Image (cartoon, rainbow, N blue to C red; front, side, top):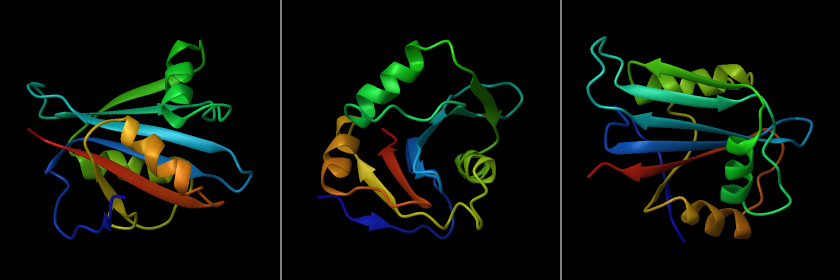
Amino acid sequence: MAVGIKFAETLSMFSNIILLYRDNRGELHIGNIEYSKGNASGENWVSTMYEDALPEDDTVVAGWNELDKRKGRVEITPRVSAEAGVEAFMNTYGIEGTWREPLYYVIKSYPDIDKYTSVNKLEMKELVAFGILAK
């Protein structure tokens, strides 16, 4: 199983960060911050957040795919850094603190999220982050 780590300086080692948060109503939410090289404005990260909660009748990845298929509201926003994207997600759900707060689990691919969540159920008001290393 992956070990969670904390960062002090930067999240630049990742090309992609996936955030999961269970709110105080028990609904699970997902966000994705992805490196997108070459934006002329210097905003080289793209943050994706979904208005709808993540469907939980299957795996996290299957629920995420379901959200992508729905006609619900999706907010896609350029960000100057991965840290700004994580904090935007946290602010959306009223999570106090900074991007340094969550544990970050280094994963190789999205299915590793399902491996984690099959063993570790998120509690209410719990935030967890998964990072795919930059190549």
